[in-house]
Amino acid sequence: MENLVGNREVFIEETFNASAERVFSAWTDPAKLVQWFAPDGCTVHFKKVEVKTGGRFHSCISNPQHGDCWAIGEYKEVSPNTKIVFTMINADEEGNPVNPVEIGMDPEWPGETLVTVIFTEENGKTRLQLRQTVSQELATKTGAYPSWLQMLNNMHTILNLD
Image (cartoon, rainbow, N blue to C red; front, side):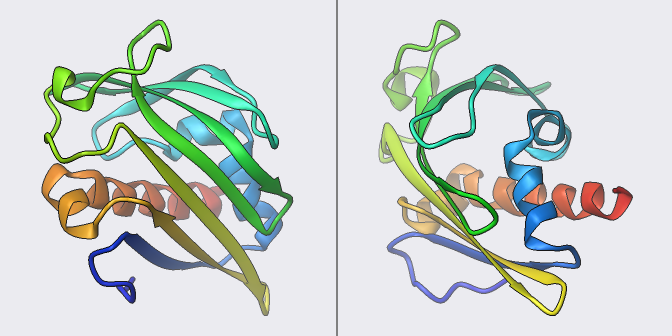
């Protein structure tokens, strides 16, 4: 894991000991997503998840200490085994966008970010590159960056169990 981009955006690179097909499936199969797409100590559930270009999701990460964090988004691009691009928008339980400040988030946090995940298979392993359109400094301060690291670590675990 290294930061090659500076503070303009979150950038995480991880290598998984699994094919691109298996890593991509962990991002697109709702049954697998619920196993890893939440930071440590939290759970995630989806009111809606439709992983396809133009598809949408409505999710909730439940944190025993901080309560529920709802998000909505749209999949801008889903290219099998190579790329997923989606928006993440802070929302309420009904799926309406909310101002991040109103739910106790940092006033600098954007109401919408774009997440790009690229999968590159090399010799049976998959290099995953994740970018999010928010400064890594702010994402570290708010907990979003360490949350991504924890979630990707959880994804390593479920891929090793497959």
